[in-house]
Image 1 (cartoon, rainbow, N blue to C red):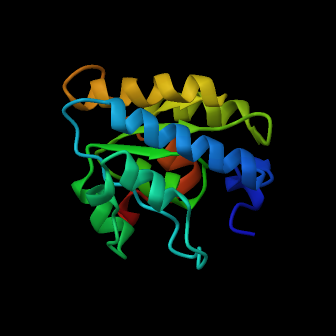
Image 2 (tube, rainbow, N blue to C red):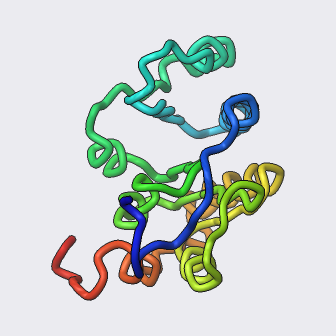
Image 3 (cartoon, rainbow, N blue to C red):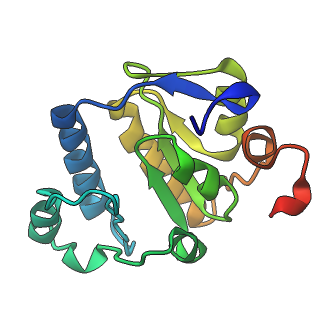
Amino acid sequence: GAFSGERRYFSGSLYPDIGYFALQRRLVNVLAECEGIQPRIRLYPWNHEPSPLREIIGRKGLGSALDINPSLGESLAQADVVVIDYPSTTLLQSVASFAQIAVLCDRTYLEITDEAARLLERRAFVAYTPDAFEQSIRQAIAAARGGDRRLDEGFLAAYGIGDNPDAL
């Protein structure tokens, strides 16, 4: 798989559908409550089924926040904060950006190595439970507004580009 060998930083399974939907609904609520931000919500492009989140996003007044840009790179270049609910390829792309990152590594379903957790915590606001994730999102937003900016490249070097800094 994409995360095999020495570059693997986590193992686990996907979140259960119902729990994942509840988590995403909570995230939409958090974003709707944060004043002074212009969220862009990017649903997974491979999901061919209509997402019930579209309706919830619309009811929260965030319908214009749906990001339909097919290029994640372009979306990241415009973002001040990236909220990641599952640490996969999007995480590796995000740590290569200048955005502040809030990421959920839910230990109920995922195991992240101690080294990866330590390095990731130097770059992102990491939560290990959904409840803590809400606080991580608020911390990342505050950091983007000028607080504790986290731009450490250790996680990217260890799990993204390896010994090739010219890869960026």
